[in-house]
Length: 227
Image 1 (tube, helix red, strand yellow):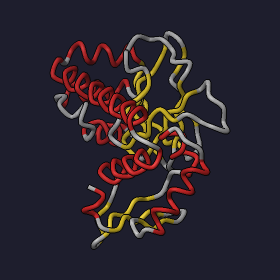
Image 2 (tube, one colour):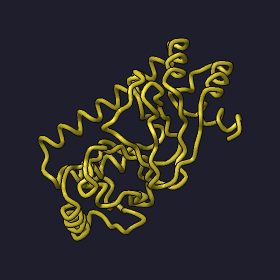
Image 3 (cartoon, one colour):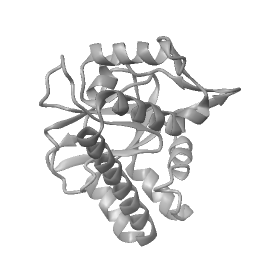
Image 4 (cartoon, one colour):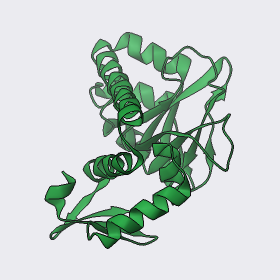
């Protein structure tokens, strides 16, 4: 990919946008940008040479590598401009975690952890932004853990759809429309239930008039109820 495109993607990512032009050009020289296709796995690197990834286009799911494929545990579903990989910047491989592209033409920007750590050391304001981003991810995971403890399956599904609509929904007339890049198994893996339960509950919500869905889109009726 051309240096100009690298510069464009880095400049428009909120974690990196505070860099001066000279520092941004330096970051460009250390980054690797690649296109990942739906279903393709994204490597975290090797022990001692781990990577941190910046999602600049598309969607990615983070799964438990130790889980089974029949009941896959999904740790997180990421949309741009999220970050993933060796977020602790320790250079140690995360063996119990893997990442998979959910959308076609997903674009990620990657740094070796040693290079990225050096960039942070030289740019305190960017380091603060990075720390805030990691903290927000931790808060999101804490909220999800609370949902798993205190909400039943239906309420977890509704909370999941609400959050999905806030982060990735498009207002079209009196509806909120979501591009449906998730399977029922993906949703089940995220809210810790079975695919059959997700199918049953979605049909129940459709019968009640709260939503309509097909393989490509989910339409949420009455946006006020989904706020």
